[in-house]
Length: 223
Image (cartoon, rainbow, N blue to C red; front, side):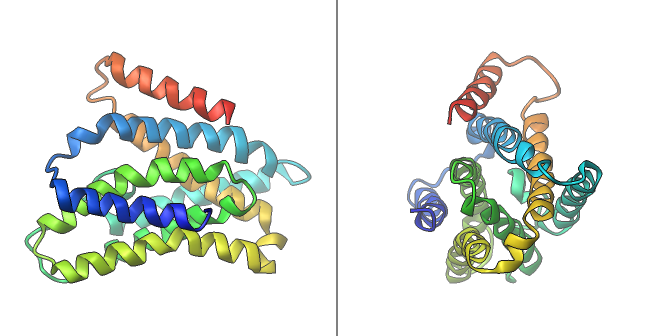
């Protein structure tokens, strides 16, 4: 199930968009807010305390910052698709290689901590579903050939399990577990906080979003 669930989350999200044809990203703002809070809380509760054990704190801090910078770099090419934005030209019919490559790298990194921290699987799933839905809306409403859109989604869905598989079978990831995990923490911190900041809609008070965010934190705590 560790390998299958991330694939199903993406593919079923694509099928949902294909069949029901939702058009607006705003429909999924509450789900995005929940996913941001849930992923942030799991990162703090599960990953962050572990990497500081028997490791130089400043070294860990450097890799966390590198993870944040890496995600910022990836977003130059994905245009923010990892947190619910796709700012590419929907009139172009060519395969979006830069978007595909950056999302695949991001998804591969997401899969690495799942091998040791199985509760992170739930955080990744909750994060992936709204992103996959929004990405699918863009792909199906663009001029990209439908076959290419399906290929994009299928390959994208395989990246997180691929990361989990590599972490489980390559000694490199076990040897450098702490810095690699710190790097991924940086990626998660950036993604989750951007989602939460963007869900605030001009910093106006929204009780439903606040309750959803609190719910995400509480559920993550008790996992």
